Length: 119
Image (cartoon, rainbow, N blue to C red; front, side, top):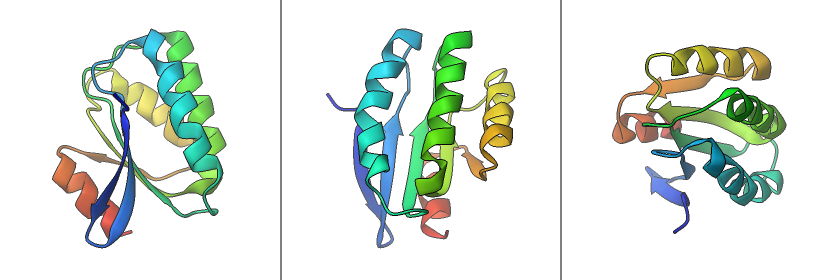
C-alpha cells in the first residue's frame, strides 16, 4: 500500500507522505516513491504534508531525510509535518537550518491541511 497520496483541501492539492510507524530500513522505499513526483513539479508549487508519528531513526536515516529535504526544496511552496516530538525536534531543527525552509509543525492532520491551504 502506498504511503503517498494527494489530498484535496479547500481547493488545494496537498502531497501527503506518510512516514508514520516506520524504521530506518523503510525510508529509502518511501523517498524513492515520492522523489519522482516532486522532481517534475513546477518550482515552488508543491504543498507537502509529512507524518512522522512514531518514526524510529538512526544517524544514516537522519542524513537521508536532510538530503531529501535539500533536494526537493526548489519545488516546495510550503511544508507541514505531524508527529515531531521529543528528540525528533532536534532533527527537525537541523533540516530547517539546512534547507532554509519554513516547515510548519502541526498537532493534527486538519491543522496541517488548513495551514497548507492558507499558503
